[in-house]
Image 1 (cartoon, rainbow over the protein chains, first blue to last red):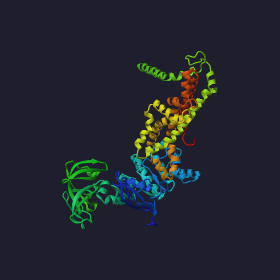
Image 2: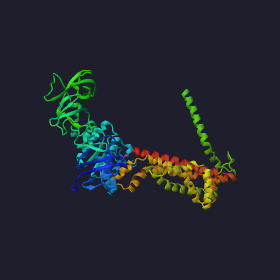
Image 3: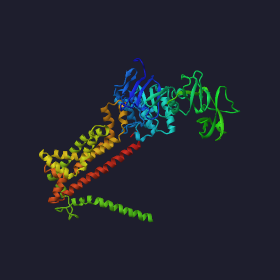
Image 4: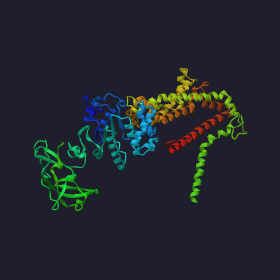
Length: 361
Length: 269
């Protein structure tokens, strides 16, 4: 494996008390230049994994390799990995320029060169005019950019971002998402971004690693994580979803039976016939079926009694019941105009817009 | 009109309270410019003889020098002991930590007179009474709790991500301390050292018991002087100390204001 470029995390375990595992056998191969997001709820092990890559935590077992070389016994200050902390961790007693020049100072770069490169890095993040300001004189967004410039100025092998956008307001967050993505494309640096915000993960990543209980439930591109979640946890955590208990009738053909929906068609599955499973359908997969909009061929259908609705402007979230099961439908705005509470509507969805997941007991 | 009347009532009250606090401090000033043989208010006539006397009389100069030597020694020794202790107590969990905490704060709870008696008999057998070193050791012990509380509060408030960030950016542990931890905590270090200095400079009870004649500090000299002739030399020293303190406070204010103005002017200054 020594010819391999990129970051290789092999079966890493971290336990603080020897009983519970904060990180429980995580393996990831991240090729050079990829933008990977660690997504998961707090306490899922994503930040601990990041800290082990940075060297602030030591794995209980397993190995972390960068370009084939093990990092585990290397001190944090010798790893050449850039990191942006959740609260930015800018040095309060230094100006923005001195903050950015700090990693260069540590590397023995000549003073004139330090200042030139720091100025260039600040220019890249649009803060050229703020070089002589102290962190407390900068806004949250500007501090974030200084932290980013500081983590990039020494051309690290890997860039780690620990929930860096959490403290920013919504507009600024979206702007920073675009800028970080832009910087990543320009520099082509291997980047790991930790967040619990699934939208951030969807918009920014090449691949998402979904963490839960110290394990990775799925490691795949965003659209695949969304459309083909590997586990029920992933389906529930990423995006909105409906789950139904079903029994497999013919796994090869993808037919299942549910108490609420009757016999419905879904995608083929490797699960055994007559075993029980969970059928997942995204709220936006449903279409209203009536005389004006007849169902397409091979479309599953069911009746939904409307209990209420939440208007989002561009779409309406309809809360209803199909038989005894509660169901959530997302109907686009103009179609939802005629819907009323207490009304029963017929909806349809395509087999390929649903997926089958193993039951968790 | 009523508001105005009430405001002036408030003004009067405020000034009365200020006078109540400041009068005992300021009364020494006129008494120091006196010609009377002993402390007297108001002075019978004005003069600066006692000031001239102070700067030529070793009976006053020696205790002044002693006080400075002892306060400086005690604050340095206190910092050398308490800085590592505070780091250990705040950042590490170890066996006996709660006990150590209690021990560090113990001098705060014991009455000074009891401590003084303890040192008097204990240092006596070690030939440490009447020496600078003895007083420095005793004052260090008394300063430990305040300095420890000040430093550990500052350390608890210190964001350790700053150290992680520095390490991440390539700083070895020693350079992390030199470039980040120490500069960020420097104000707290200075305040703590100042506490120790003032505590020692001000301390009277222990000094009375163990400083003797050779290591007599200013408070001890004050006490002796008041007991014997009560000469206005006491008022002279008090006035000088008051002047030093006021200069320091006003000076630091001016420096800070100037620095803030420079910062507001921004780059290029």
